[in-house]
View (spheres, rainbow, N blue to C red):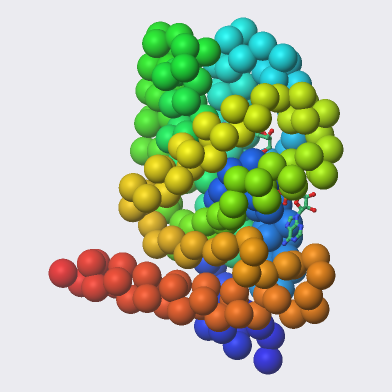
Length: 227
Ligand SMILES: Nc1ncnc2c1ncn2[C@@H]1O[C@H](COP(=O)(O)OP(=O)(O)O)[C@@H](O)[C@H]1O
Ligand SMILES: Nc1ncnc2c1ncn2[C@H]1C[C@H](O)[C@@H](COP(=O)(O)O)O1
């Protein structure tokens, strides 16, 4: 029996992996998609025309970058919708708006007008049929030092040259955000509890939890429709 059937994970599920920069989303996305035979939706970093410029000058490029990410996510959402699910997605759209754009606006590195234009566009996009809530949001978390070490070891120059206070603020904002998040069910996973790169079969206990959460959430959705 394949792992998806073994853990009763519906073939049309949409699973989103969330968490701060460097925590391990892409690695988890690949491992889950591989185990479940699902498709992946990744953020493309290497081909992003604004990211490097943004890290050098937040104020100048934050609006351009957010619009770029929004356009990319919209295309990805549309693709997921058209395939009818069966996807693991690296980062949710909720993080762009609820964490990054908000943080740059509140810190004065995105103007009020730009922030309003961005949020209006975001709200209009979310109202289209392409944005069903995921079945499950997997939230990866860990100690700040552990995550910082991962950013350093991964070695993207633009991130290594960014101040520790930026990562620290992001880390704290993520904590606050997840504690108030309620758009879909959440499975919180501590990165010190598993090691996808070293252990042989660390993925099965995670799949078991995913199956359980999605079953619960689908039952709940069905009850809401019947009501
Ligand atoms: N479970 C893990 N155990 C050890 N190292 C990991 C694990 N997951 C990710 N890493 C490493 O941490 C770094 C950041 O991971 P990545 O998946 O790129 O994070 P994100 O997508 O959240 O930015 C990479 O160098 C990756 O190889
Ligand atoms: N919405 C965003 N605003 C600013 N920066 C962002 C946003 N989304 C992603 N990023 C940055 C953070 C990292 O440098 C890269 C890739 O993110 P990762 O968490 O490593 O997948 O893009």
